Length: 167
Image (cartoon, rainbow, N blue to C red; front, side, top):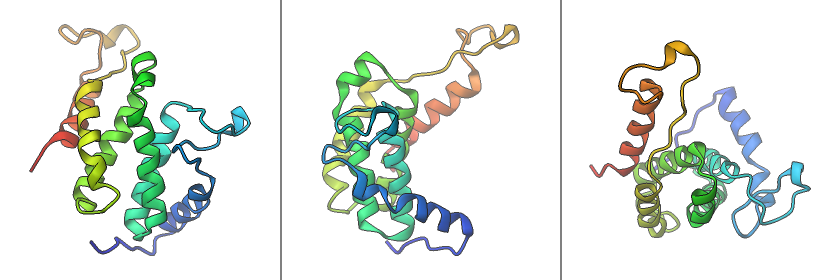
């Protein structure tokens, strides 16, 4: 599929932010985190998946295989670490993987790096379940919501459903 090129200054900014990350990425898909002295193999939980998703989006828009591969590797790190999901689930990681799945399915269905990962990501998305944030404050607790934000529940469910939906 042809790239979605644009001359927007926002796209130029995204390109410049994304450019160094493929070279900084560790072989296991993690990225160095200056807070932890950049040690390989350390996961800041949703950092790999969110940065991976951003690199994937920029790579697809720019038709840049280096960025696409780095994005897929970061997202695949998250998918491959079900132990982290079991111990410390992350709604942001779920969001990044679900959104990455949608981008992959729509723009990279036949891409040699995405196609083999697709089933594993779908299986992971079904397995991790739905995480939500509790509302805070007195007015937030509505009958039947279980203390959860109806809007957040709907958004989280919609993103997950979209990622797993097969047209």
